[in-house]
Length: 475
Length: 105
Picture 1: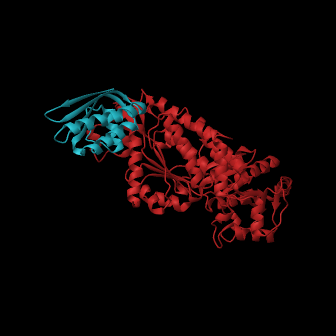
Picture 2: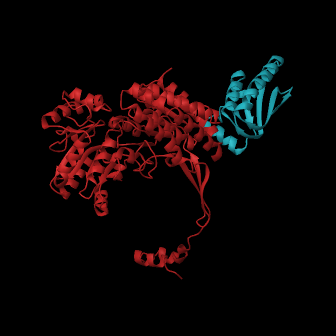
Picture 3: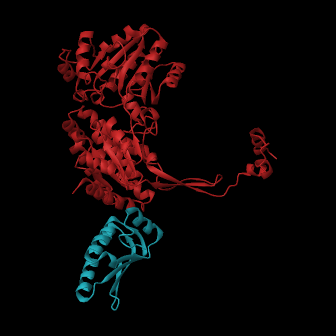
């Protein structure tokens, strides 16, 4: 069977599921979602262990937290959302909004958060009555398939249609492209590397993608420094730094540099000498580029030190280097999804914020920026100049950007990065993005039109100001 | 629920279905329909035609689509049709991309 035939089979089954799904009401849909989230949550530990073992990334204990986020927190976030039938009825405006499913959705799963992203995408698709076809990174195939099987079994028992969840087991590029460009596909939910996201955008089908991150964290003089460092470490070491919203650089003013360093050392950060930093830089990225070396993604700090050929204390939690600048010649200024951080010490506030802007625009446009401050003016100034979908305040950015833990953002493993990241939205993508909204509009004539006579409209001597005035005349 | 009505001269087997064609119902219904078709086929000289009348049906599960597909496999596709669907069921076949294959009206 060739790739097109295989794609047709997947899509035919998904289309049938879409047809059946369309008949379900909100209550039936919600019951399915409830049963599926429970199944995912009940398997959070085994799936986390499978994911850590198969991908060799991160820590299984943190992946348990991710799985809880992808099941319980996502469910809690979407459970009261209306996604079937009439979702809004504005009698005065005469507009009734009706939710319709999109149709089959192709979900791409990254290896950094495989099972949690699978649970998340399945839940938001089921909540919106959209069949889902899953394709995972080849290094996470087994755990993703297992997560999908668990969900599918629960969904079927709860009354979901056959084939509402399918998993692609053949990971050839040709099959992926055949599905992505298939005429029966409604949407691609592309969470993954830049290449795959670009391919999805080029498919001709609507795509909700993500962009890469390069999260700057500005610690203002007004911040509680001890708290800030503790939170940043908590975030950057979580699952060995595999979350794309994790902090990449800390930017501070000279005036607080010593306090910051003291706190870092107190919390077992290892401040690299320039010589050691050069060694880490060599293994952190592909030579001459800012592309991170996939071999160090999600690795424990000791393993990174071993790879770099440096010796660090056993209880070290994070490596911190001080690059001399920003750009390809300073590899630590780019995104590194591992427990390695850059520290920039600037002369003053303006220089620090300008540094944040440069880092933000160095491969992380539209993603996430973080600030620690207790000065609302500074917070808003920072938010104004950052090009980010999320600016998290006094919050660990890994967990903060995902939402639902430290704030009320939608819980999501697909973080929109807006036009800067070549995405359609800056929002945390969730169920609300997976419905078509049909608007039934009753006749409610706009009486302003009655103020405009044909004589005025067709008289070239009547200018825009006159027409505007007449249009708004209250008589 | 289902009742069968075989019109001898035309060789048309009418399957009149009522109620919700849920997964459980379809599990029992599938073999029942197949048995009936097999019996009629063995009796008839010419190929028989099968018509599913869905006038009284308000929901179909995946299992029902399977029954339809099994049925067109056992007779020629042009000898099968689904009639009297309500708009919601019609839309279901439309979205599934099967309205033409299964001759739904």
